[in-house]
Image (tube, rainbow, N blue to C red):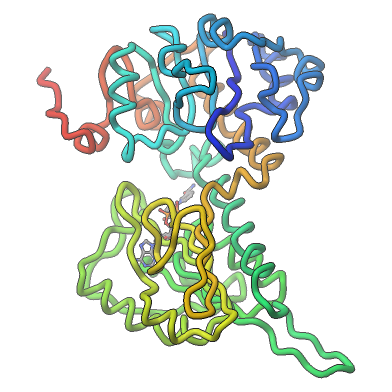
Length: 386
Ligand code: NAD
C-alpha cells in the first residue's frame, strides 16, 4: 500500500506517526512509505534516517496527501500554515488513521464521512488484551503520567525522597494521585521511584490492588452506586457521589505536597474533585498537576496549558504531555499504528473485516457514513434508517 506520514501542524505537537524503525519494517512487508519533509524533525528523526529506512521524502503536501492510499497522523486534522485544510488534501476513498477526538469533535467525523474517507480513530481501539499493542491511549497516557510526576517534582520546593544527611533528616514528600488509570498508575510508579510516599484514589475499586502493588496506599471511598461502565471505564457519578468523594479526599489533599489528578470519564467533562477550599488548606509551595486540564480539569482554578498560583499553591494544567517526550512517544505510537495497519491488511492490501471487534470499533467512518452511535449522538444526528 502507498502510505503517507504527514507532518503534524498542531501547535506544540512534536510527535510523528511513524519512526524510521517502523518504516523499515513496513517497507520490508512490501509497503511504499512516503514521509513529508521534516515530519520527524521535532522528534529528532531526520529525513535522511527515513530515506535510509526505505521511505521517500516528499516536500509537496498536496502530492503526499493526494497520492496516498493511507494517511497516518498523530493529531486530528487541522488547517495548515499554508492555508490548505488537511481534510481537503485527503483523496476521497483514502484511509486515515490518527487520533481524531471523535466524541469532542464529531463535526470533523461527519466531514470525513462526507468526503468518503475510511477513518480509524486511535481513541476508539478497544481496551482489551487482544488490542493492547494497538492501544495508543494507553501508550501515550503512560508517558503523560510519568512526565506529570517529573513536573510536580521539579516545581516542588522540596526533595521527593527521604534523606538522612549530616545537615539533618529530610522527610519524604507526600504525593496524592487522584485517578489510577494508565496515567495515574505511571505517575504513582514514578513518584515511588523518586522516593515519595504515595497515596491514590480512584472511583473504580478494582484498581486498589494495582495501586498497592506499586507501594502506594489506596484511599477507599464506599460510594452507593455503580462506578464502572461498559469497557471498564469509570462512569459519570451523581452529584451526591461527587460530594461524598470530595469530602473523603479533602484530608489527603490537605496534607499532600503534590497532588496529581488524572480523573476522566470518556466523552464527558472531567469531574471537579479538588475544590478551591481544599487548595486553601494546602501548604504554600505545594503543587497540583492536573492532567485533565484539557477536559475541563479536576481542580478548581486549573487553566489548560498554564501554571496558576493560588494562595501559594502552584496549579499546573499541562496539555499534550506525551509531545514533550517526542522520541519515545513517537516510537510507541508508531508501534501502535503499524500493528493496527497490519491488523487491517491481508497480503499487503487493506482487508476490512467489520466482524472483527477491533476493526469495527476503531473504524469511525466508511462508505460515506459515521459508523459509531456515540459519535452520532455527540453530533446530535439522527441515526440513519436502513
Ligand atoms: P481514563 O483516562 O478514562 O480515566 C483515568 C482514571 O480516572 C480512571 O482510572 C477512572 O476510573 C478515574 N476516574 C474517573 N472519574 C473519577 C472520579 N470521579 N474520581 C476518581 N477517579 C475517577 O482511564 P484510562 O487510564 O484510559 O483507563 C480506562 C480503563 O481502561 C481502565 O479500566 C483500564 O484498566 C482499562 N484499560 C484496559 C486495558 C486492557 O485491557 N488492555 C488497557 C488500558 C486500559
